Image (cartoon, rainbow, N blue to C red; front, side, top):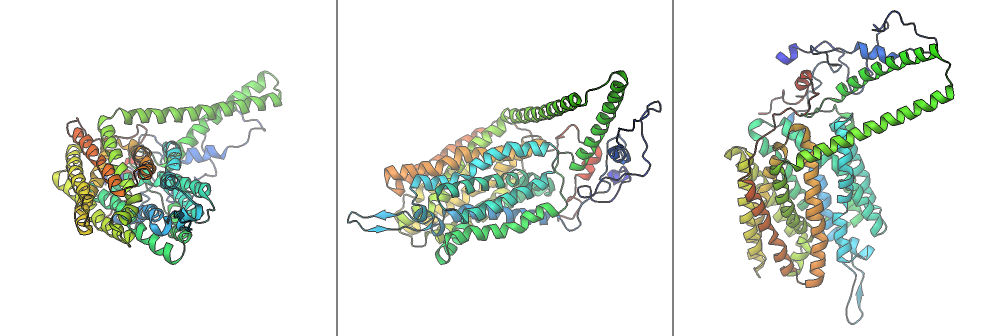
Amino acid sequence: MGDEANKPEADSSKPDSAPLPSPPTPTTTTPTTTTPTPTTPTTPTTAMAISLPRDPEGNPNPSGPDPSPSWFTPKRLLVIFCIINMLNYVDRGAIASNGVNGSRRTCTDSGICTSGSGIQGDFNLNYFEDGVLSSAFMVGLLVASPFLHLWQRGYHNPFRLIGVGLLVWTIATAGCGCSFDFWSITICRMLVGVGEASFISLAAPFIDDNAPVAQKTAWLSIFYMCIPTGIAVGYVYGGLVGSHLHWRAAFWGESILMLPFAILGFVIKPLQLKGFASSVSKEAKGYGEMIDQKFQDDTNERTAEQAIPVDNDLADKTSQKFNLSTGSKQFLIQIKRFWKDMKALLHEKVYVVNVLGYIAYNFVIGAYSYWGPKAGYDIYHMSNADLMFGGITIICGIFGTLAGGFVLDKMDSTISNAFKLLSGATFLGAIFCFSAFCFKSLYGFIAFFSVGELLVFATQGPVNYICLHCIKPSLRPLSMAMSTVSIHIFGDVPSSPLVGVLQDQVNNWRETALILTSVLFVAAVIWFIGIFLHSVDRFNEDGEHDVPNVERSNRRPLLDENTE
């Protein structure tokens, strides 16, 4: 209530869609001794800037009352983000399914050849090329993440960037269904990574901001539960669509399902992220700086005109050089800010250890998700490997991920407790998964592998809780982006092709699976080290020095709703 009392009166129109007001008779601070020349255009921007309401500290505040949409509650935000996240990973599961990925063209010693099926058969891919397809999205993700961070720290509302990313994802996924060879589908998979970058870096911070304090890890676990669930649904979806229609139809279906959410990112009122000044305040600040610069330029111009005659061509060239120099300077400032933020992340030991353990963990999980159906089909002669692995992953992914989040909340959500849960669950899960592949019986494999996956998936909530709370709020999007980039570029990106190369050499899926599973023990040891590191929860630190108090009151678009 105190924040509401301090808000100045303002225009109630939407700040991001309506033009800033311009009164008919603007007040100006120009000295009375200065007379504008006829060639000097009137500056409506001056009127707009002066007419902006200001808070008690003198900061521009054109946003007025809290712009929260009445229907957009925290739970609805969570549901929407969960559906989007699930669609992202349905795509991962679908491209790995036997129905979409298919099988290679083969020839027997007697000269009888089969044409193969799916992507592998149509494009005649070897295992290495097939593994590259699962990792190609990482190239786009890696390239897009730094630019997205610059835009987030610049003049773009983070919520709008989610809409842009989802639109790119939608177009790229449809392009996968229209591809005609290995390189065309690889390029489309790269663009899928570009589209995914904004969502994966921003969704978790938005959820963390709006979740009830006592249930933050549980809400994050619900969100990350969609990863194994989405992959598992993708196995089933890809198997059914690929076998009954065509592997191309699977990609087109994903694109159609994502399109409404891409549109939603553009039409809904954007939410504000903790640690960032609103786009309206940045716009108002930009207007003020522009007016100050314009007034100074006009004054200098009139002084110069009175002193000496000016060559107009020379003046135009000089002005262009000045503008180019100013733009370059701003770009360099943004680059320096990015490297400063990166150094802050890399100097945070808790963050580094957490991500290193996550890399080793994801090395295994990524290869499981891609090669699991093929390994199960070969080792245990599963005729329905897609459905079997999909079913196990759905059940264990849901219950394991939710259990991890709720257990950490019950333990008291601290970084140290999160590391304890990560190391313990991963170590026990590694034992069960390793033992599962030693069984010759299908039933023994299913029993032990299910318990192992249940334990392994319990890590999703705690590991991301650490990424969000070991750094200041303004670094959370970069933290999530770099975490995701790291676990992919050093984890599942190399693991899929490397496991493919290993299988080409060993030609024994059981041995390959045992070697792969042993990497989970490495992840458990790394997270065990994190228990002994000094850790501080920095969630309540101010993320940006230039965020005024009025922004802190306007930053709560969802928390006023009932989240019980």
